[in-house]
Length: 311
Image (cartoon, rainbow, N blue to C red; front, side, top):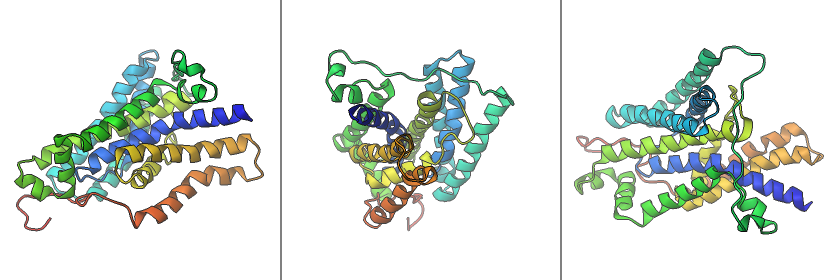
């Protein structure tokens, strides 16, 4: 029983990387006032780009991560051009880019790989045994034998928190998302700030998508993301757009996903279809409870026009 608990918790930490990276990406852009809703599509396109880059380079995962992050960043730039510069509705643009990204991701894979009976595979990430502390009973196998991306996701979360809440630069970023007009009068370049953080936020979302085939499957399919992009929005809302809370929220949602898998392995007297629904049911219940009292940046989803009298 103890081994089962250790495996469950260890796998939960591994899966949490998907939600932590995607939600931190949303947090970065959201803190400047840009609401990203295209996570599902961007994660799919980035996973495709990363898989192809790795596969064509004989399993080079580092090159794959770079390709996935750049793919996400490119969609961030496109989002910025359409919403920040051209002042188009952020939600409409986001949903349009979601559909575009999913189509591009699947098209790229088919164009390069074609139709195959057995899908090609790439190497997957393995855990790193940290000397000494990885041998600590119970805690060691759970926390200190994870793959490098887990530690990177924690480091990114801490860095984003420090940047946002412990530096004057972070104060400027948050001011852009709270009241862009006031930020503008203080000499802050609102458009440049939104461009920058939408790019890097989308790059993190791209890394989240890249991590799925590199950690879970080792292959690419059209249903690879399977709703995780949508769930990452709930992760961000539950975390209140605060980096450390978002990180903890990612762990919670990862636990729901892993439970849906382990419930089947443990033979619980519940339909397997119902267990697969657990992460989405939890998402709905949490959103219903949290959304009414969610602390959102005041300028979230609102485009800023210096010439307009009303934002």
